[in-house]
Length: 100
Ligand SMILES: [Zn+2]
Ligand SMILES: [Zn+2]
Image (cartoon, rainbow, N blue to C red; front, top):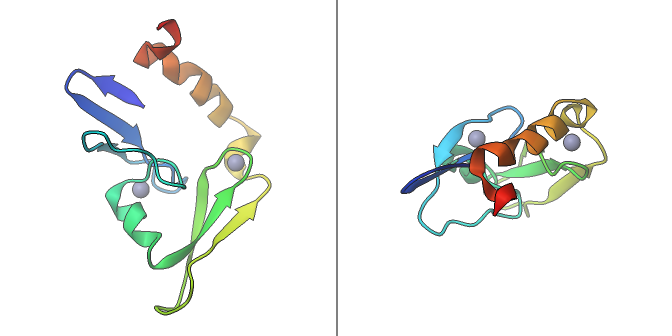
C-alpha cells in the first residue's frame, strides 16, 4: 500500500491487473485482499482462483448467473516463484509503517 497524505492507494491483488487505485476512506481489504473496483465487481460474477501461499488472485472463472460463486485455491502461483516476496519486503520502506 502506498500512503500519500490525505489519500490512500492500493495495488490490485489480481495478478493480471495490478492496477493502482484510490481507496475509499476507511476501506478494508476484502477476503481477496485489495481489489480494484473492476476486479471486485468480477468476484460477484466469477469464481475466484486464489493462491494460498501469497493470497494473490491468479484467475477468474466464468460462473453462471445463479451459480454459487466459490473460491478455488492453488498452492502456488507464478507470483510465488520470485519477485512478490521481494516486493512485500520493499513496500514498507515507502509507507514508513515498519518504523512506527
Ligand atoms: Zn484489478
Ligand atoms: Zn502465489
